[in-house]
Length: 254
Image (cartoon, rainbow, N blue to C red):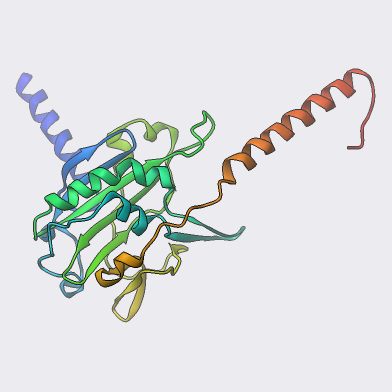
């Protein structure tokens, strides 16, 4: 019976590791309640066209926390739906600063046959009624470029998953092939899209190393949270006024 339990636990462990991501293998470098960073071997990546990605990379990479913010801080994406299109930033500034230092250390530890996998979950509102969202991406370096391939972009995580590392780090495969999708990165300054099979993959960003010094993070106006707060306050005031008027027997047309 004891041997059976040990065997069952071993099968469960292998299942969790194989389901944790679409790649065949990943090795954890750093993790917190908000992010996880892994190394992934080049030969463990699922690629249909082997020529799309170099066999070896220009690793390790020397980069600063500030330059990580410059690289990631201005990237925006569009989410299309039948209700309309929404444009937003991929990352909040505080979100990037959560994992920037460990990302820098991870890039310095990379071997020429590895890339980094980063999974970040973030909730800017941090209220009991709000959800965390998850973004996953690969990052690596060539002789002339730093390249980032995104998978999920601000994908909402259910309450059941967001508190458990094994749940929120369980992401779908990040495809290197071009594929049609209603959620994609918007063209911005400092990068180009990688062409795959003649099409621009709008999840695959190529930053020319010669232009990295020109990249600067653009500060944003903090409007989202105040707008939410004002909206909630307005709703509460309205409810209070209606309740009082009801008690007084007055019907208000407001």
